[in-house]
Image (cartoon, rainbow, N blue to C red; front, side, top):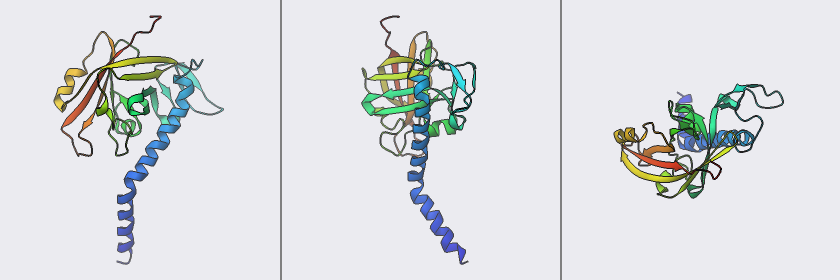
Length: 210
């Protein structure tokens, strides 16, 4: 029985400080991945397009691939940047719980950004201001979205931004013959099992040399 008060104190401590500790964990991995992704995705690196099996002096590179595997085994697709909401976050392969815990997930079966079709990117809305898709509801038609991927820069302009019921989002994740991205997150903020979704679509801006 003497241990019960101590256990209750520990449980209370973890309950109170869990959001803070979780935020520190996510911030650590985001910054670590972004630092490792910089030379691969934001520069014309000779290593672009290959899988990095390990990071450091003993890096091992495999054959050309659409993914880059970095520390922690995270498979990264690129970097998402939205100046209006001060967001720079890694894009990870898939929408598993761990992928969405750290960054933005590329929905399986949808194309990589820069390829023909609709690249669907999903993320949670964190309790921290400006973290992940916390501020996605601030985007409006005409706002700019940038994706850095394997040394290329893809610029997009928002053409659609709405809040809708969850079942309606399937109308906006269909395949297409144009280069576009769809950003999706939950709404409202801080609610368990929120009934709505924020859906933002953006069309790629062609480069002058294309």
